[in-house]
Image (tube, rainbow over all chains, first blue to last red; front, side, top):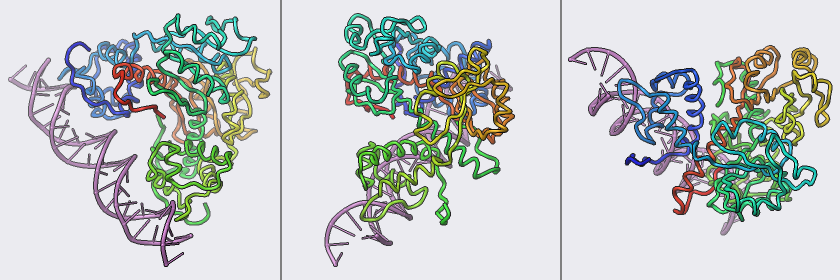
Length: 225
Length: 225
DNA sequence: TAGATTGTTAATCGATTAACAATC
DNA sequence: TAGATTGTTAATCGATTAACAATC
């Protein structure tokens, strides 16, 4: 960060691949692997070595000629790039089944994001706790965000509630929304949005099944990432 | 299907966009819109009209010069392409929080997929019902699939269970897996796989927040789909 | 030094956009 | 017929891959 690294443009394609590097490197680190060449990592991840070197070089030279990449160092760099260690904080809005599932999962903790609370409108849920996280009234969101730093809102409310919740979010200094609803959000551009359209994914699977069926056999294109 | 349509190669990029067309067209249909031009749809979806025409023409000419596209007809065609109406069936493997959430959601029904049951190993869950769907023992999966047609397995088990469950799935004639676990699956190529790496998505959001923060202001690139 | 492997430039490939002739 | 808008070809743009000089 401090030393003057070449500011190469980072394409959307590269950005999207970073978390996958993070996953593989974490695994390698766990396995006690000390160093890895782009060729070796490429074989593991089922991509080209060229792509790996190109991708990593968007952010500066993390390798060493004749040696390869130090796994621990590279993992650290990728983590840094992805904002692990920024200690981003999150709240889940919508304490339904999906909210439950996310709160109970290691999804946040595993990526350095600190889940702090859930918010809901149901008086049956408010005041209780879910997987150890307190559930507050949605009306308290604004006040909560003024007292506690909240970076990310995870939207797991029904589509019908999205518009009104969006407004509430826009009124806080929350920086990003992880949207699980079908509805397209309209938020000021200062807010980052990541949509998880589960229905779309299911349809992609159906389409793929259909295509796979039609082929029946033809040395298929294999799995998809 | 019957009439000889030009068999143009459909790129991965196009395939991935189809469910989004489905969503927008369904909405337009609901709104009572009868026809739409590529230009109008492009404005709505925030893409170029060229792209829409190119995309649709991979599957044949669904429009009419000087008129545009008949919304109902086009929606029907897209639905057909995506396999809505094939009446694909699904079972959820792993009756935890996420399994619950998916079973309770309209995700399947809204896309023409018929959810039939859940499977788990916990004796506390087996025999009960979740959102009206029966929960069976994982040991019964094989037999169940022999008696009932099952096209899709939704994998919501912990990572540690993925390998053994994968084997069980491979032993059936299930055609596709919707994988919510972190673990990369290894399955015979006859099976389609769609991975939902939620953690990756969360990291993409963090990265975006971080970038957004660094800019602060620069007429940003806006939301992401 | 010799061998290995990166960083980086150049070549290729694929996807998006622009343009326009076909046609409703 | 004139106007509109598609289907489709050609041009552009961007992303991936190949190649190799730099260098550890």
